[in-house]
Structures are given as structure tokens and as C-alpha cells.
Amino acid sequence: MPRRLCEYKGIELPERKACIDHTHVCTSTLPKYAAVSIIGYLKGKSSMIVFKKYSKLKRNFKEHSSNPLKGCQ
Image 1: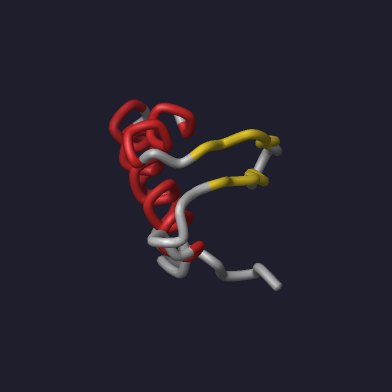
Image 2 (image 1 turned 90 degrees about the vertical axis):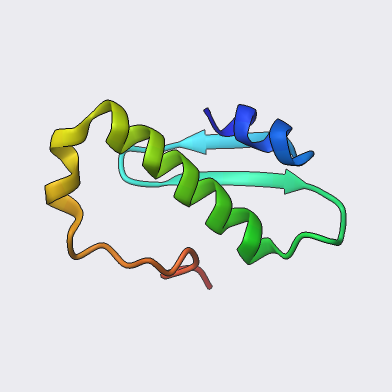
């Protein structure tokens, strides 16, 4: 799923690793995209796809933050 989203925007995704509760990605793109914009785009679009497929999950994430870089240092 992330690879298709990246191809649409022209972003290369050379490396990624999915864990149970989070994902690590390495991206390569033109300087016109800020890192926060890329992560926000991927997080937003992938969550829409997941919640569309698994609509019962949506009620469990009411407390989830909309900040795409929360917890990143």
C-alpha cells in the first residue's frame, strides 16, 4: 500500500519495515516535498484505506493524535 501511494507522488521508498504498532520508512524525493508533508500524506491516505477495509477499527482510535511526527525525535 505505501509503495503505490509513493509512486503516485513520485516518491521513492527504498526501504521500509512494518512492526505491530508502527512503521519505519526511508524515502527519497525531490526537495519540493517537506518530510512532514510526505509522512502526513502516507499516514493520512493509508489510514483511510485501512479504516475503509476494517471499519470496526475506527472507534478504537478516537484518542489518536493527528500529528504525523508525534514521538519522533
